[in-house]
Length: 258
Image (cartoon, rainbow, N blue to C red; front, top):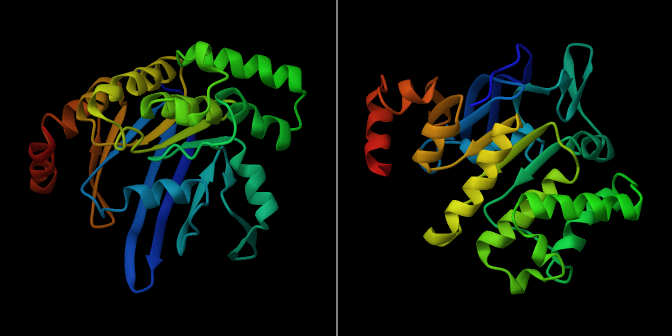
């Protein structure tokens, strides 16, 4: 685990989200400090993935506010109210927030290398030689330098997920979000993906991770947040939340996944 800086890179204050009549986030407040790994645990339907998607404004919020590096995500202040940003401005904010999904979402007609250089070339207008050199270094970091010219259909699920991580890192994000990145993988492929994430944590990458991998949370997380029913039930270091949870809901969940 990384020694933390004082700055709260991500701040959530009273965040609410509805889908129709269903309130899935009920006033969530939490901080993620620069260099911190925060793991969100909880049963399906507890709001974890929705919360993650709200952090980079893939979902709008219905109340509260989210800031990343001091900037309100997805909205600008207009007097006493928040007004949603133009999609172009939201896209600019997302350049500094990498996200890795359950499904790999790679372009099937592009090689691993081409998938990684796409956003730096198109969004950041980087030179092609620089983008390629950076992509090859990222592929080396995730253990796939020999697979640069392979298409997604030629890669295992674990390899595709590592390409997806490299693709997110290619934009040089200040924050990485992981939405159950190993849940779609065969068990024997999970370890390689988690190893990459552990290396990122050791290098000081700020990460918010939704996962059921209790071993990863125990080993890597600086803070574990247990959610249920759209609220934070309890949070704290892994030794507290996983090993000695205070609430019965947390204890029941931990027993079910161990």
